[in-house]
Length: 75
Image (cartoon, rainbow, N blue to C red; front, side):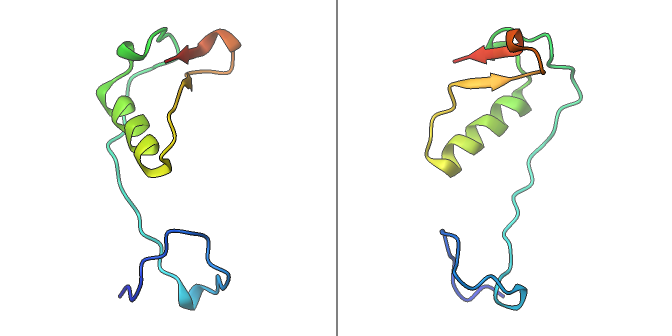
C-alpha cells in the first residue's frame, strides 16, 4: 500500500520503505531500423516517446533507431 507518492529520488532507499510504480506500455514487433522520419514509426513507438516526454517534462528531439549515426530521426 502506498502511503505517499514521491516524485523525487528519496534519501532513504531501503526496500522496506519503497514500492515502485510501474507503467506498462504496448510494444511493437516491427523493425524500425529503416525509419527515416517520425511518422514512419509504429503507433506504439510514438506512444512510448510521448509517454517519456510527459513523464520527464522534456521534449524529445532525436530518436535513434539503430547504432549508425544515419539512423537518427530528428524531430
